[in-house]
Every structure is written in structure tokens, then in C-alpha cells.
Length: 423
Image (cartoon, rainbow, N blue to C red; front, side, top):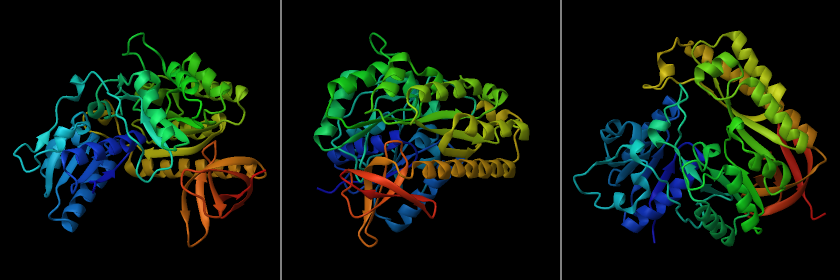
């Protein structure tokens, strides 16, 4: 049975939802469609989606093109007017098979008010196409209103998937052979506030670890450090199946900028959190999201962001020059010049890359277990990630999704290399 081509932009949550979309569209009979699951986090992400849609129409003039995701939810009219687009589907509607039926019908735009959506249902998927680790949605939407962020208008308010549904999904994936699962959402540390009894993310994580002992590795997507509850802290620091890598939504290192962003933490909170985790689990590696050139950011303010990389011991940085999104409060603030935003982003990325190289050198001689993601028959090499999410090349061909014990032997051309071992 053929399945539709689903092209995914943006976050891990989109990757999970794209698999649900594939299932629903196949069930509805839209097997020959090309479906774009878009992102709206930056203007560049929206531009890339538009460009890809136009290219797909040129190369496949007879195919049905469907556009969904955050960018489509926020501006459905813009996407409906792109030549070749058959249907535009909202973020809630994209999870329903009915949305992919009758593509020749007159209803071109199926986008309702995302703020009216009150629940997020669990969707059972058997795996994710082309991926060695599985993503599981536990939460959607966001109740916070950071001044730079358009995503709540694409995702709606925060809503959670019940603990039983999450455990059922992970159990199915483990049965299918997945050894690593990533819990995903828009704001996963807000998990549970809308559920009966108001469980927290830590309650969910501990239940998963107890109920599914066969699960080898559990990861968490981006966390808001000040919202980490006691049970989650205990699971992160006390259970080796929770991988020693946390990705933090920090965004800036200057308190005034954080306040103008309407973030809920200070730079001192970030430093204290990373120190407290490392005190209990010294091998922990922290990644982080940052925005450079936020409105009113001075050079001195940006320097505090650079300093935070050292003060928190950060690696694997995701750096974005500030993108003014229409309809957000930050878009009305005094703007930093675009070339300065990009120059600061380049400096912060360079800082992050230097930190990564320092980490790689530190790891030489250590043992690790690599989750293999892909292999290259021509070069005879495999690539995967260790427990702390360090990318590692291994000599030899290993199956995607397998766990390979290695000795980390050397850093070569900026990459960390390991040798497979059964010791």
C-alpha cells in the first residue's frame, strides 16, 4: 500500500505528528498526496515552507498538495493562495482522517480556532519512518506568552495526554523494537495541569520507568528549568535510563532581556539548576536554545549570554537570530539591526562549537553506548548518539536503532570517533 509523502519542518513534535498524519491520510485514501507539516517559529521557517511547496508543485504538477502545521494554522489564507495547493488544514484538524477526504471538494481551508481546542488525544503509532528513536507526544500548546513567540497562536493553550495513553504508546513502540523514546511537546514541563488530579511531568516519567522496565533509554525534549518538579528532578538524577542530556529553553543570559522576553527564569536560576543537577549526576550534558539580537539587546547584554555558556557548562547550542513575528509584542519593541543579530548568532555558535570540541576531547578514553541512526556502506562507517547525546562515528556497519558499546578513541576533523567493543 502506498502512503503519502509527508515533508516535515521544525520540531520533534512535528516529527511525531507527521507519522500520525501519514496514518490518517493513508486511511482516508490520500495516498498520492504530498503533505507539508510546517513550522512558524521564525520567518525563515515560513519562507522555506513556501519555497518547498512551490518547488513540489513545479516538479509534481498533478499531485494533490496539502499544507498543515503551525504556519498554516496562523496564516491559512497565505498558503491557500500558493499555486498547486489543494487543501490547507489546521493543527487540530490535521490529526483527523476526515480532513484528508474529498480532496476534489470545494472546501479548501479546514482551519478552526485553535484556542477553542481543550484536549489532546493520544495517537498510537507503530514507529517513525526513517528514525531510530521514537518521539511520543505528551503535551501540546502553551499557556505562556513570551513576547517573541508566535507558537501559542499555532498550537493553542496547554493540554496534556493522559498517563495511561502515553504508557500504552511507549509500550507499543518498545514491542516494535525501539530502544529509545523521547517525550515531546510544546511546553512539556507544564504537563498535567489540565488533567484530573493534576499530575506533573515527574509523575509521568516515574510511571513510565516503573510500568515499562523493558524501555532502555528515555529522553526529554526541551525543558523550562524553573518548572522542573521534585519528582522529575529525582528521576533525572536517580535513574540511569533517563539519559544524561537535558536541553534547556534559556533564550538569553541577561536578566533585563529575559524580563522583556517575559521568560520565567533568571540567569541565576539557570546557573543554580545546572549546578544542582550536576551535583547529583556529574556526567550530565546540557544543551540550550538561544535567541540573539532580541529587541533592545546591547553588546554588554549579549556578553552575558556568551558568559552563561561557560557558567552553565553548555553544549549543543541551538542559536537563532531574533525573528520579528507579526502579532507578537516584541515586534513592536525597538529592533536590533539584522546584521548585528546574525553576527551575534555566529559568535554564539562559535562559542558553542568550541565548548563541544572541549567536551569531545574530555570524552576520549571513555566508554559509551551508541544508538545507531544511519550507516554508509561505501565508507563502512556508522553514526549515532551516545547517552549524553554526543554524536559519534563508529567503524563498521551497524543496524539503525541498535545499541553499540564503544570505546571513544579520538577526535578527528572535529568529530568524535569510537570503536565497537563487547567489553
